[in-house]
Every structure is written in C-alpha cells, then in structure tokens.
Image (cartoon, rainbow, N blue to C red; front, side, top):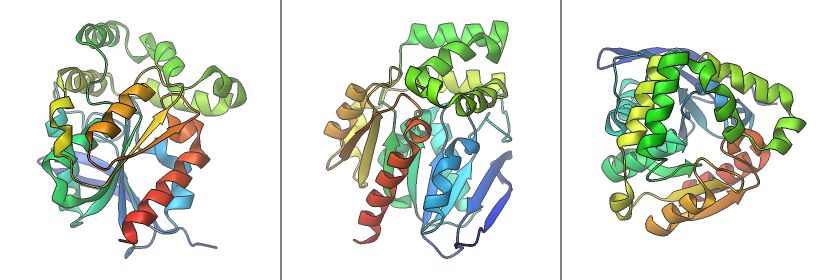
Length: 270
C-alpha cells in the first residue's frame, strides 16, 4: 500500500493568493495539472491514486477559480501561463511535466511556446489553439453577468459529458455541476475573455517540448478535429482519442490515467 502524502495550502504569486495541493512523495518527479474553465483542482481527483504512486502531483485552482484569488479581469492566456511559472517559482520547482484540459490545455500551448525550459513534457487535453467564436464567448459572458452560473449550467454540462455517461454516472455529473455552480462568476467571465482573445495556431510549430494531445470523440466544445490539428502542427506530438466528451479525464478516467502514465513513463525513461 502506498502511503498518502499530501499538502494543501496557499501561496502568493505577484500579490494574488493561489490555492494548490501536492500529493505523492516529495522527491518524485513533478506533474502539474491545470483545470478547465468553471472547475477547480478537484476535477483531477480520479487521476491522483494512479499518478501519486510514481509522481509528485501538483494541482492548483487557476486564477478566478476555486479558492484562488478572483482578481479583476479580463485575463489573458499569457497571464494565466505566467501564473503557472510563478507557482513553480514559489514552490522552488525547476521543471515539471504539465497536463492541462480545455483552457488548461491552451495555457499549456502558451507554456510550450514561451517557457519550454520549465517543462519536461506537455499533455494537452480536450483543447484547441483557437476555442470557440467571439460571438459565442460574448453571449456566454452576457448570460453569466445577467443570470449567474446557473444561467449556463445546463448547456455547459451537456458539453462536458456524453448522454451515455450522464445516465451511467449521474452522481459524478451532479458533483461536477456543483463545482461549476460554485465557480466565482467574475473569474469565469474574465477567463472566458482570455479564451476569446487567444489564437495560438500560427505559433504551434514553435513547441519543442515532447507533447501528447488527448481528444474526446464526443467532444463538441473542442472537437477531435481540433486535437488532430494540434498534433499535426506540434512537431513530434503523439495523439490519442478517447470515447468521451469534453471532460475526458472524468468520463474516461481509467483510459486517461493509463495514457498519461504511459506517456510520462516514456519521458522519464529518456
């Protein structure tokens, strides 16, 4: 039996308070997880038992999410990427493996382009170099400003999980819905603006960090075609498609974790 070792606490990055959690042995290689829009570090719970046996797992609530500071928006993907580097600096972690989903995956692309020396590998999950449309993001921002998180919850949940999974695992879906409903509206809107303004397509060829792209075959938010595009444009990237919608790490948790462990094992063996 692996003994559970974890630390959950706060640190400051440029004056803003960030909530993070560390699991696993202190001297193990670090894997940093970055959450999706409207969630917090608990979205990765299913990955921890498998990962913490071999790695030091670092999770954090991104700016405006969970228990981290809700600073005035709008945010930028560059700023959110610099938060990740700041977190590594604050915890005195020179390099780490990175895994991000949705906006977390977009942040990972920025890091691969602009902070490659800090990362041994990138796993970019259910993401794209350009996510959605300006009109779509503006409509979502307006809906949250007028009606709070409840105004968008049903639509978001329908994209996060397939109908089959919703029928099969209603308790998991409801717990994730509650995570979304408790997400700070101001932070959510500010992050929507960051996604709306970012387009990384022209810079993807500059990613030289070993990369794995994971997509969901049923993902309508960031489609499998979006994932294949990333894998084609990032030199040497590996591509994997899971039978899941947008939150593939939850819907296809076992397959996701196995793929991540295999990829990380390959990188550690180099």
